[in-house]
Figure (cartoon, rainbow, N blue to C red):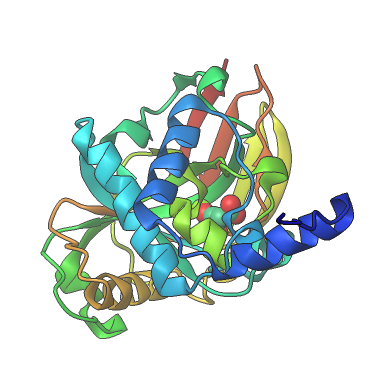
Length: 277
Ligand code: OOG
Ligand code: MG
């Protein structure tokens, strides 16, 4: 006769939790799950609730989840940085710069209608975008920026964490391609000598929801290009002529409201808008 001890519920839960820590993670399966969550606009539980995993593993999950998008025909168009301002780090409780990949399917047109049904709990951020005029294959310095960057523009990023309640660890959000889900870029402007001390604001209809200066982005938005060049090189991500970069939000992100036109304004660069429907 074999007796099997089945602990009562609470103990059993703890037991499985402990096994979870040692379970080997199937990065491809997790990447597919995240991709599906994004594609179907259905939130999922944080990966970190089930597994302990490293930043490098998180970037590998991100890379694999992008493969799913590319297989459906989406094209890589550039990079984004996240948590380049203290306002964003404080809002999300995450204190390290992160980077993600943008595709053509995320790129909305100025004044385009944004279908709320395609998002879980979208938030908007005021950003600055850059356009490359030359392939970047090394870490570049501030002095080299005008050799590599053609133009800049005001931008809105729409982030939409695939995790319930927009809650995540650093590794979770990296694996989730840094919550990337949409963006709009205003008219390209020639690169000024400095992008410091420019007022940046996010409006819903006429109401200013958030405002700060461009210095909130790494003290100097041009540093986002240096950082993106370093990260793209480190992770062997091609970052080429014609690609774009979103430098990271200058202010906390704001939940999008149906019917309220979103506008980002950057002093001297103009504005761009989206209409959530
Ligand atoms: C992560 C993305 C952060 C930014 O501009 O700082 C980001 C998130 O907050 O969900 O895009
Ligand atoms: Mg952003």
